[in-house]
Image 1 (cartoon, one colour):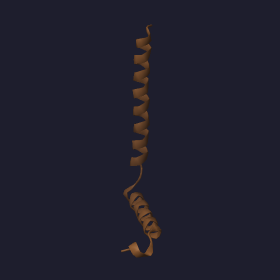
Image 2: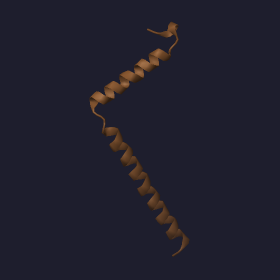
Image 3: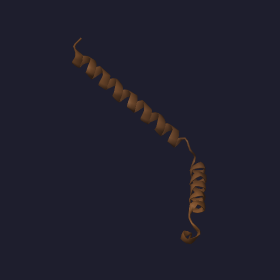
Image 4: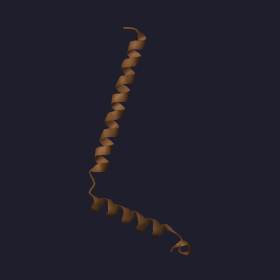
Length: 58
């Protein structure tokens, strides 16, 4: 085989591997229930408010 065939094969394998990683991340993200997402957002909002100086709180 010529070098360009190996290069093309490596490119195809890279695209396939990237697609697998993206699909895995998407499945992990969609695994949360709406209640879990709301709870996490509330926790993050409370942490952000706690981190603000007293003069900036609303």
